[in-house]
Amino acid sequence: MGSAPATVREIRRAQRADGPAAVLAIGTANPPTSMTQDEYPDYYFRVTNSEHLTELKHKLTRICKRSGIEKRHVHLNEDLLAAHPDFTDRSLPSLDARVDLSSAAVPELAASAAARAIAEWGRPAMDITHLVFSTYSGFRAPSADLRLASLLGLRPTVNRTILSLNGCSGGGRALQIAKELAENNRGARVLVACAELTLIAFYGPEEEGGLDNILGNGIFGDGSGAVIVGADPVGPVERPLFEMAFASQTTVPDTEDAITMQIMKGGLDFRVSAQVPRLLGCNIERCLIEAFEELAVRAEWNDLFYAIHPGGRAILDHIDGLLGLDAGKLAASRKVLSEFGNMSGTTVIFVLDELRRQPKDGGAPEWGVMMAFGPGITIETIVLHAASSLQQN
Image (tube, rainbow, N blue to C red; front, side, top):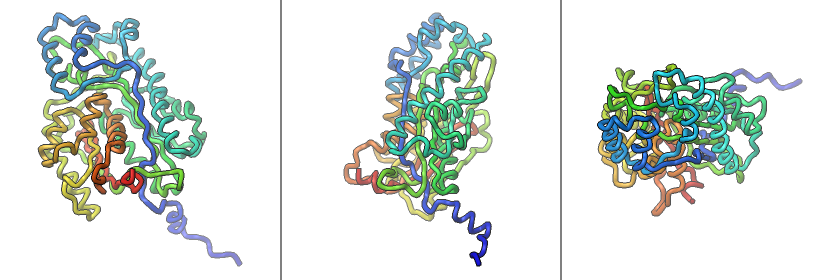
C-alpha cells in the first residue's frame, strides 16, 4: 500500500520557502545624456522658449541650488525636443508621441539594469520565475514587462506583474511584492525592475503656475534599477546582500491631494505639495516603531542603517532631525540624490546599491530599514537584516 495522500496544509507547507526573502543582486542604468544642476535653469527656459518669465526662472534657480543635486540624467535631449516642440506646451495634444517614445525606451533602459543584476547574480536569466515591473512612464499593452522579458530571454512561463503610477513609492511596492512571491513559492527567483523617463511629464512653465509647476523639472531625473529577490539562497553562487525581515504599507490619512499624477492630452501632470516633507516627518517614526515592534526587535535609530528614498533634500533633512540621526546616517540617500536626482520609484534601488558599496569601517549595523514614499501619501517600509556576506565585504 502507498502512503496516505498529503493534506492541503502539508502541500502548502512544502510550497513555501524555509527562510526569508533576500536581495541577491542589484543593477542600475541611466540614459547617456546628463546635465549639471547649475546649468539646468538656463537650459530649461531656453528649450521651452520661456526666457521672458524671469521671476519663474529665479525660482527654479533657487530650487536647483538648494536641491542637494549636482547632476541628473535625462532621455529627452535637445534633438528629441527639436523633433517634438509640442512637448513644451502642456495645452497641446502630445500624449501619443510621448507614449510612443517611452514605450520603446523604458524596457530598453530596464534591460540594461536587469542585465547587470543578472550578471552579478550568477545564474541564467531562464532561472527567473517572476517579474515585477514598476513604471509611471509606459501606457500601452502589451506593456513594458512583456518587452523586458523578451529582451532578457526570460522563460515563456515567467509570471509577470506590472505596477503603474505608484510614483516614488513604486520601487518599495515592487520589492514588497517580490518578498511575498519569494517566500510563498519555494525556489522562486523574482526580478524587480523599475524604470522612469521624465519625458512623459516634461513641459514648459506656466505663467500663472505655482511652485509645484516647476518643482518637478528641478529635481527629477531618469534611470532604471533592478533587483533579484529570492529565499533559501543556493551557495556558493548566490550571495545574499539584505534579508527582508518585515514589510508594511501605510497611507497617511487626508493626504490624497499632496502628491498627484494624472494622464492628460499634454502628458503626465504631476503635482507635489510643499507640505510633503512635514507630512512625512509626522508619520515616519510611527512606521518604524510599529515595524520593529512587529519583529520584537529593540532598535535605537542610530544603530540602524538606512536606505531612504531621497525625494528631496528637505525630506532627508526632516528625517535626520526627527530621528536625531548622527551625521552620515543618510549618506547613501544624499549621494544618490546628488549624482542622479529623484528618479521616482527607481531611486531607492540606487540607494540600496550605494549602501552595499559603502566602506564598512568598524563593521556594519546588523539591522536597517528601507523606506519609499509616493502618492497617497503612501509610506512603504521594509526592515532589512544585513546578510553575513555583506558584513564581511
